[in-house]
Length: 133
Image 1 (cartoon, rainbow, N blue to C red):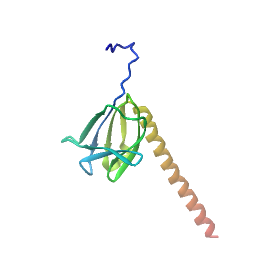
Image 2: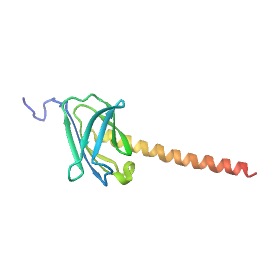
Image 3: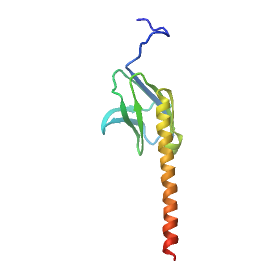
Image 4: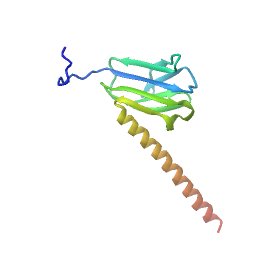
């Protein structure tokens, strides 16, 4: 098989790996549609990695109890992520092929959370002021 730069070969496999700083357990679980796909054990460096020969495109969930996050996986992806379990959502960063869509997903989640906090504080202040009349 010729794998030169001009070849249109695309791998069907998906690589998923990462490192968890301050882990709360020694494993990470990968789910799709609320079904467990895999349990990935952390090594001595709190890292894990796995190559899946065939994994359907879609939205998966990674869980490191008590935290979890959605992740988009597609054939050909090679994703590495690093996260501090003490500050899970704010520290999660993806790299590798397929990382940009997941970093975008994470950014949108954080923006929505911040917007909800802001709107809740405005609504609460307006209601409190209204009832003080």
